[in-house]
Amino acid sequence: MFPGFLIEIIIVLVIVGLALWVLQQIPMDATIARIIRVILIVFVAIWLLYILIGLLPSGGFGYGHRLS
Picture 1 (cartoon, rainbow, N blue to C red):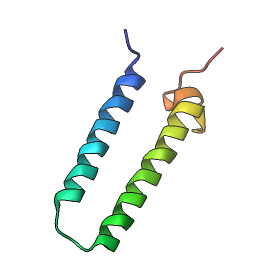
Picture 2 (cartoon, rainbow, N blue to C red):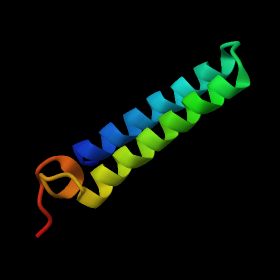
Picture 3 (cartoon, rainbow, N blue to C red):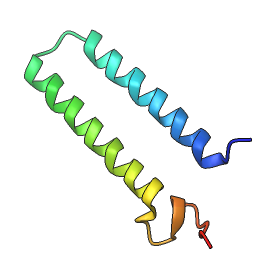
Picture 4 (cartoon, rainbow, N blue to C red):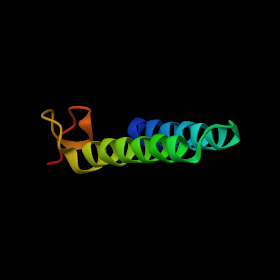
């Protein structure tokens, strides 16, 4: 069975993918859309690094689980 953090990561990535798709469908200036896309992708990349590498103060996976 998948651990809870993997399910959360999958759900967040699906939601971010849908948000990027919706952003592409909205008629707006290309520069503004590109800036929003870059900010969203950078935010998700940093969030994934915190979750997977354990850069949060709580330790591994950002949920307080410590790898022994």
